[in-house]
Image (tube, rainbow, N blue to C red; front, side, top):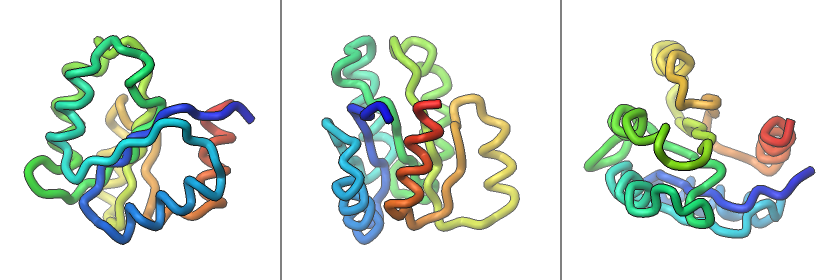
Length: 134
């Protein structure tokens, strides 16, 4: 399995962030890790590093419900800049929502690789990395 180098976690839930970081350490796939508590800060980071492949993530875990800019707003803005990033960023929505509408909406967006129901455990990360490398 190829090692994923960079990941960004966009979520304001401190417990989820803590548990996800713990799971990431257990599977040891990440060399560079960043976290943001809202979509606007993550979007600003991506815009600032557009074209700088060594600073852009391979994977972005995105919550839907956050202050300032939620996940849907982030995706709307990202759709405008994504093609100009310089690399494909795999965006996984990570949400506690089990709303069929949210899941269906996520599947209509080209920018979204998958919809993951929180929490993310070690086994799910391993499965995701296998899919990511496929």
